[in-house]
Each structure stands twice: as C-alpha cells, then as structure tokens.
Length: 426
Ligand code: ATP
Ligand code: CA
Ligand code: CA
Picture 1 (cartoon, helix red, strand yellow):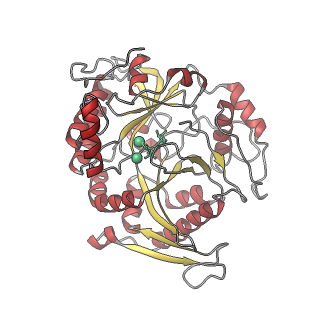
Picture 2: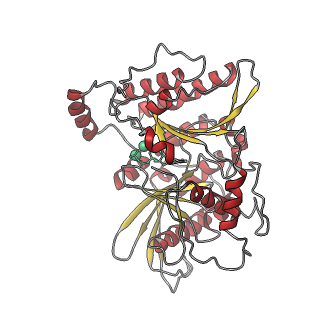
C-alpha cells in the first residue's frame, strides 16, 4: 500500500468515469447551492436527485462529452455538512472540478475501492460498494447530528454522496471526503492504527525501501513511536476520541482506524526532492490544456512529484509561473482544533511548549457495520488466534479497545489499559 498515484488525463482508462463524476458534482452541487437556504426536513436525508447527461443537453443539464446518468444523494444535508466543515461552496466546486484531472491511487485497501485526489490535494473521492452506500444513507441523520454537536470531530468529513451510471448500466457509487494529508508538508511516516495485533504489521524489510508505505499497529510499537501531547491537548484529544467512538459503537460500526501521518519539522520538506519534483513538471500557463501525464508508481521521487504537481495546480496556492511551493496552510482546516497547526496537530511537551512533530490524523473507513460476515470471521479466526487480538470483534469491544490503545500510545498516557497484543517473535 503506497500512496502514489497516476494523474488521469484524456486517454486514461478511467478518464470518462472521472469526467462524469466531476461533471455530475458540478451540476448537482451548484443546482442545490443556488437555492435559498432552508431548514432540513426528514425527507432531505433520503432524497435523491437524478440528472441525465448527454451530448446534446437539455433545460436541466448542459451538454456533456458523454452520455451518463448521475444521482446526487441528500444534497441539502451535504450542503449543510459542508457549511459545518467551513467549506466555501465556490471554492469546493473549483477545487474539485476546475480542470478535469484527478490523480488516481488505485485500490490501496482490500475492499477494492478506488481513491482519487482533487488536483489541489484537498479532497478525496472514494468509490464505495453499494452496501456501503446504503449504510451511509442509513446513518446519515446520526452522522449529521454528530457533526453539528461535535465541530472538532476526528471522524472523516463527508462532503457528498453520488452515483454515476454508465450507458451499459454499470453503477459507481462514491463519496467526496477530506484528505487528511496536506499538500504543503511531506509525510515522513504513515500509520493506520486499529488497536489489534493479528495481521497488523507491515513487513519492516519492505518498509525500509518503500517510502510512503502505510504502517500498522505493530510497526508503531516496534519503532517505539509515541504521540507527544501536553496535558491540554491530550485531554481534548481523548475526549473527542471518546465522543466520536461512542457514535461508532452506537451505529454498530467496526473496522475503522486512526490514520496518522507524521511530519517531522526538523526534516522538513527535503529540498532536493522538491527541486526534482519541480523539474518533472515544468510550469504551464493555465489556459493551455494539459497533456495526459502518466507518473510511474512506487518510487519516492514520483510520490513527491505527484504531490508537487497537485500543489502547483492549486490556483490559490501557486500561480503557474511560481517555482516555490507553498509553506502555509490557508484552507478551512484552521477552524478546527486538531487541524489548526499547518493543517494538522502539533506535538507539545508536558509544559505545553510546541514540539517538532506535526500529526495529521483522523478516523477513517467508517462504513463497515458488524454484519453476519464479520461475526463469521470472528468465530473462525477466534478458533485459531486469541479472539481479542483480531480486527473483527463486536463494535462495543472494538471501540473500547481502539480508545484504550490510542490512550496508551500517548506519551504519559495510560498504558495499563493497552489491549493485549500478540507480538510475533522475530
Ligand atoms: P480496507 O477496507 O481494506 O481497509 P478501504 O478500501 O476501505 O480498505 P481505507 O481503509 O478507507 O480503504 O483507506 C485505505 C488507505 O487509503 C488508508 O490506509 C490511507 O493510506 C488512505 N486514506 C484513506 N482515507 C484517507 C483520508 N481521508 N486521507 C488520507 N488518506 C486516506
Ligand atoms: Ca481500512
Ligand atoms: Ca473498508
């Protein structure tokens, strides 16, 4: 699992799908946004708006390059959510759809989902399974309520839920959400933490050569990492974590994780790599249409090149002539406690003096309810392994173990409640 992507230009296998997704969002979102704001009703949570696009166009939809159908789910609810998340509507549409190029991460997880980044790296489109889509619609009201009462939530921020239907009938469901990682800071290590130990180790031999690998619980412990948060940050973080996990327990959700990106300010953004990246992408004038660009996968240089390219495409952060990358975060993140320091959460010592780490963190992958499948897995894996160390445990146990594990990895935090971990002998 390496966070490197391909830019999608015309000619790319998924260009048509991407064009359709972005065209649909542009029309759907601007339609809803153009209307007068009004209080939400119960019907808004189940609403779906249908658009039919074709090359001719009609009074409802302008002409598009391809024939496809688009569904916008609960547009009024997501409009209000975007407001809670401090997204400016015009800005949102521009970031997401100004140029029809996203970068594709392929399928980093087991689930088969695809991830696409907006050109400015702020938003992620994740394709989801139909059952995940149904589940999100089912919990949407509770999620909305939680966001309203927990402005500083650590949960994934969902900005839209949509579906594209291609002419031959294939349906693709997707959500738009926040990218936890910033465009202007290199992430030196990435962890996906669940609080379980079975299957929770990324091979260290491979991690050595693969920069950008997503490491897991046992790597975190094995490398002796700690979250350094002074007393104030620690208690606010733990309180928010508990509140968020309460919701997940109540909604019967499991298998989520805390994604953490570490930026070490002493290492900074490696100048040489940033220079290389700039050479790969020569400045271009915005009016000239970009040629399809393919970036090879799986090398550190390419990862930086991709991120530099998307940084450069942000009209606010950079003009097409600049060769200097942005150093400041100017996004909506500054409104939120856990994202206020350079888009992240800065380490502090016991006296609340700022440290040199920035944590980019949040709870991701929220669409797995504890179903029969998972119960089955719990049963048969429980026969061979310690059943409390595996990922698939009931939501209440999952949530408590998650919170206890995360408390235990904070410097000075409560280690006595650390869940039992089976550490493999090496
Ligand atoms: P699985 O169900 O097998 O875990 P999935 O397809 O549901 O996989 P996720 O767990 O949601 O995928 O995410 C996979 C990886 O994608 C994460 O480990 C992380 O590296 C990256 N990722 C997911 N969401 C975000 C986000 N909001 N910001 C940044 N990176 C993310
Ligand atoms: Ca996951
Ligand atoms: Ca998943």
